[in-house]
Length: 211
Image 1 (cartoon, one colour):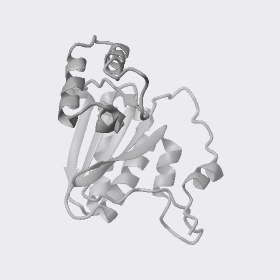
Image 2 (cartoon, rainbow, N blue to C red):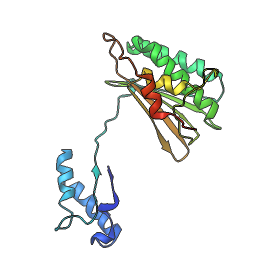
Image 3 (cartoon, rainbow, N blue to C red):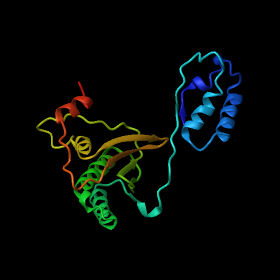
Image 4 (cartoon, rainbow, N blue to C red):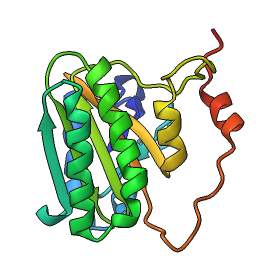
């Protein structure tokens, strides 16, 4: 559950913030299982006469994957981790019957683990694969530095890692933890359909570094 502070502000006449939080939690306990019912129950706690501040509420229901659909490994932060991660990924995809994603996933794992080793600070690098309707690859390190796509000069040998990840996956992003971050990339298995062509200039324009 995520919400803006308009649900809690004392200036809206709710009084004590802790008491207001308790009121919201109580409303959730008595709501039905449908997310729409939960939103309606929270909306019923708003004071009459309309809000004095914008209110946004985002609800999501998540489910845990069974153990056989998750694979995870941890590596020391050293260059040899890249080849090891790629080999383990290939073996896991074969076990899941998803070898058609071997090339794309191998590229994604190589780039993300390489970035984690180079820029992830001290500490181990973690790789996790999650198999559901899609295949999600997650690489975690100890750095909070935000990853970004940049335009590499023609004379540079590197600098294209995240650009390739964006090309070969449906979506990607990062989430942050108190100590470190996780960069994830999602692929949708569609072996019978060719991958859509990517507008490289449009993609670079979205993430270009003007400096």
